[in-house]
Image 1 (tube, helix red, strand yellow):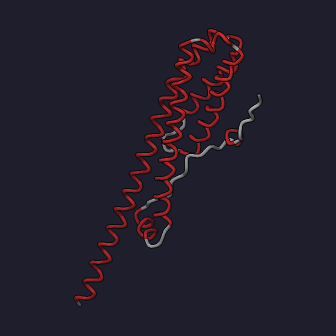
Image 2: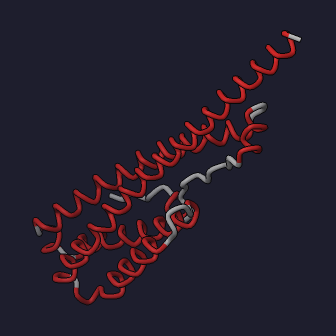
Image 3: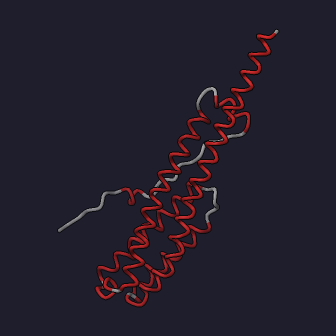
Length: 183
């Protein structure tokens, strides 16, 4: 009788520990996603200033600038929890921002503009922080996914509705390509 009771108590304690581990992993993934969201918001807030600065020097590059604004608005319209769609939208926006930064090569006055240089530095800093946040999120998502799929925690995860997280990845193959450098 005591042995059966001891087994039930041990099983219950183990179930509680597994459940708490799953909750901790889910919270880490949510916190990590929040970090990405903050960095993406910072980048989105920087874009209007960058566009206005470039407009003064490269007015006839209107389609490129309008595309960046359109892609920024599309990225911000993606629902907060849709990691895959947000990754795709942000990948397209990043590529368009790269084209705006490349305009500086065609406009020496723009390249020398202090406001543009500061905005470009800020954008580079934010892009680095987005990369760090993305790595942190993907690590937290991986940890949660391992717990959700591994035995015996998958039994508890299935019982309480814990689900795998999507990774925040670059979906545009052109963004993965190694750039060609020519001298």
